[in-house]
Picture (cartoon, rainbow, N blue to C red):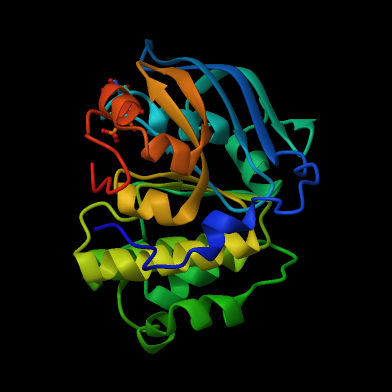
Amino acid sequence: MTSRTFSSSAAEASSPADGSTAPAPVLVVRDLAAHVAGQQVVEHVDLEVAATGVTALLGRNGVGKTSTIKAVMGLIGRSGTIELDGEDISTLPTFKVASRGVAYVPEDREVFSGLTVAENLRLAERRGGPHRYDLVYELFPELRERGNQAAGTLSGGQQQMVSLARALLNENRVLLIDEPTKGLAPRLVTDVAHALARAAEVAPVLLVEQNLHVVRDLAHHVVVLTDGRSVHHGDAAAFLDDPVATQRLLGVHGGPAAGAA
Ligand SMILES: Nc1ncnc2c1ncn2[C@@H]1O[C@H](COP(=O)(O)OP(=O)(O)OP(=O)(O)O)[C@@H](O)[C@H]1O
C-alpha cells in the first residue's frame, strides 16, 4: 500500500550513511510549557529539529502540536528553553523569532484573501533579501500564472502553495509547517508532499502531519506528543513500523503499511 511515491530524498537526507556524527540540531526545545486564555495547552515538551531533512511532530487531535509550534514562534505565552543554532530565542517576540529565520506555515494557510498571489508574496519578502522567486516559481509554476488572481479565490491546495511559497521566499534556518495536506484531495497531497521534499532540501523542517503516508515518505525523525507532553523521540520508520506504538500514541494501527491517520 504505502510506497515512497513523493520523494524519498528528504527522508534519507538526514541519515549519515558513513557513520559520521550527525550535525547539531537546528532547533532545540526543552521543558516547553505554554498557555492560551489561562489554560495550559503545552505541559512539557522536549524536541530537537534535525539539521537537515524533516522531523515530524505527531500525536492525536488536541494533544498540543499546533500550540507547540505557536509557542516556539512566541505567538502564545510560553516558558522553557528554545535554542536556534545554540542561541536562546525563548524570550524573543514573534517578529524577532521570524527575522532570525524561523518560518511558520500555519494550519489554515492564512493567506491575505483580498490580495493577489503576487501581493501575498511581495508582503512576505524580508527586507534585505535575497528573495528566492526562482525556487518558488520552479516549485509552484501555477503561482506565477495566477499572480494577478485574488488569493481568496484559489483552491485550498493553491492557497497551501502560497503559504509554503511565502516561507520559501526568504532564507530561513528552519521551517515550521502545520498540517499542510489537511483537507486536500489525494492528487494535491502528492503535489504538496513533493514541494515539502524540495523545501526540506533548502531548510530543515518541523512538520505536523496526520497523513502517515506523507510522514513515512518525508520524515527521518519523529517526536510524539500526548496530552501536551513529548513521550517519544526517534527514528520515523522504526516508529511507523511499530503497530503497538502507533496504536497507543496515535490511535491508528501502524505497521509497515501504515496509512493515513
Ligand atoms: N485559543 C484557545 N483557547 C482555548 N483552548 C485552546 C485554544 N487553542 C488551543 N486550545 C486547546 O489546547 C489543546 C491543544 O490544541 P492544539 O491545537 O495545540 O492541538 P493539536 O495537537 O494541534 O490538535 P489537532 O491535531 O486537532 O490540530 C486543545 O485541547 C485545544 O482545545
